[in-house]
Image 1 (cartoon, rainbow, N blue to C red):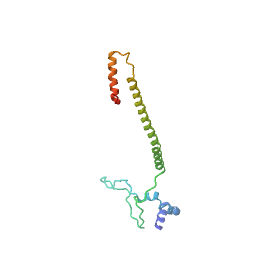
Image 2 (image 1 turned 180 degrees about the vertical axis):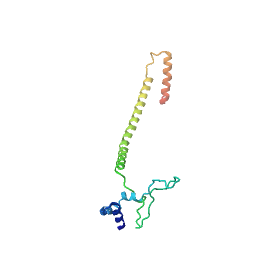
Image 3 (image 1 turned 135 degrees about the horizontal axis):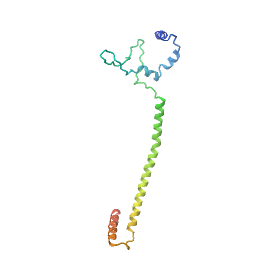
Image 4 (image 1 turned 120 degrees about the horizontal axis):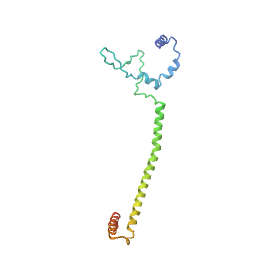
Length: 154
């Protein structure tokens, strides 16, 4: 720890005064994630233009401190992600009843259309044929036979 104080003093020109805050925050998931993740940034190291695997490879520590791996502890989700997740839940919950209402309305519409067809067929069967000529009468009889067959009426 003393070596870290000396390095800070050399870099910043003043004493490190945030030790209490550092002790509180050093084990928080948010701050652990940054120290344990390897950078994916690539840089050119050789004259031939070949890329290295990372611009800042992990450095070994002499103090023996090994931060926990990111697979064991996860960083909490941010504020925007939490809001997005809540909105998705709300939208999902609110659309389910609406979908059910739409399905019910379509079923009722289909039933009423079927009922109208039955009423229309019944009107055709009970239509007065006394004023029809022979051609109209033949067409009416064919249509009536089809309707009777449709409903199983003999």
